[in-house]
Length: 218
Image (cartoon, rainbow, N blue to C red; front, side, top):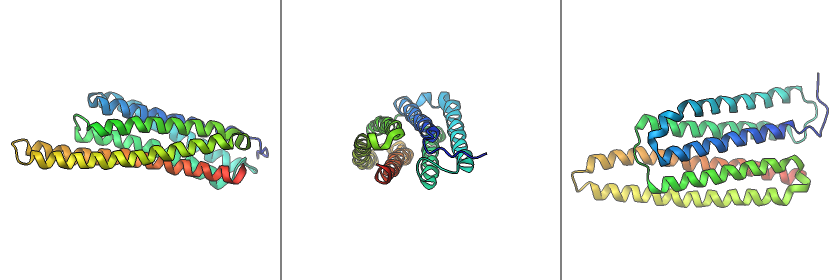
């Protein structure tokens, strides 16, 4: 009934799977930001991705219920699994907002943000692959965590720049016949860009958990 093996790597394999789903969702969002006309075409795909991520999370929880000994603390497994699934949910929420708002053309910095999100989630996948041997890979895992932190800092910078440009453009347009369109564009994209920036913050949160595991077990 119970699994007593501390060498069990299935948890790590499931982490990798959900990190890969997170990365794939980021790639989808990046494509949609570059061409919002694709958003409706990708709805079913990202919904399937979200469902697959939830299924992985459920597998992890079920496995925890049957495991007497785990390769890392049960609390860490539970927290990491939940946050990875939440990351995919956040990407779906951003996509749904783009569709709901009929967002139109993206801001320049939002395209930079989603490209950065793709790189960040790719680094998360790498970090989880290294987790299968924490002692051996502690330096590489720490380097991955530092990369993710630097990406998140860059994301904060891009977010501030984009907000500033959005409000500056709107203030300029208020003096013209395009005022209404500019205000609507501002309302739409300040929320969408905030969604993307918060997802980058979430990647940093997950990477902090990875670092915590390294500190415990390396």
